[in-house]
Length: 220
Image (cartoon, rainbow, N blue to C red; front, side, top):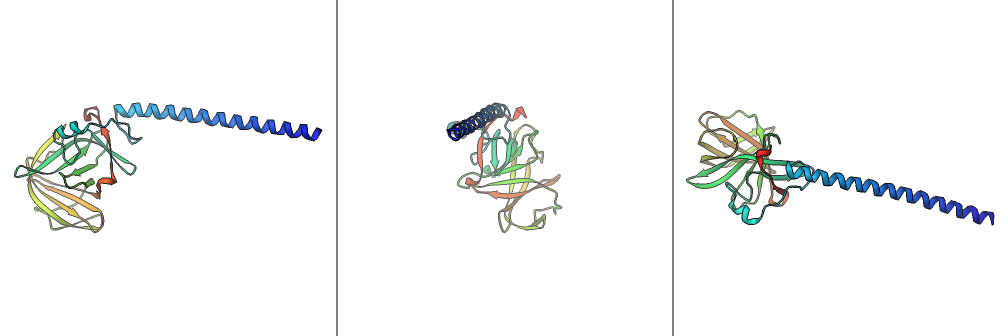
């Protein structure tokens, strides 16, 4: 009988210990959910890399947004892998009044990255950052950036239309050149009368990035 009582006591103690562990796990899960909810509320006011918190705009609003190119526009929050960028300003590039692409810059408080988008049917984007590379007067047929060789895929004279607050000032006309490397490397060169700039990075297919939503870049 004593062995039976001892077994019952041991089983009761194990059950009590398990209940304590379960209650602790439930408390931790509830706290995590509360923190996640609080983070989402913060993200709606100011997007960060914590997740998909910004509200998605409707397709109708998407089509009417000023300067939207390839489904992207001012205030959009994009994510590639673990990196998030908030588009705060941009330059619209036209050739003979035809939109060729748009170069978007991160909101001031967000970072220094850039994103290049194209009108349909091109679905890919260029995920870029400024590159310090010496350039001749005219964009060359080949570039070397960070040990990577890129060949020029196209070049065209472009009229620049600023979008948003305080975009990069390159004047009103540039020669734009697009470059691609042997893998997914990509670059754009904007050659102006006063200076030239280079943005280097990689090509991202349409399914390789997420548009988390949109928020007013004036909040940056």
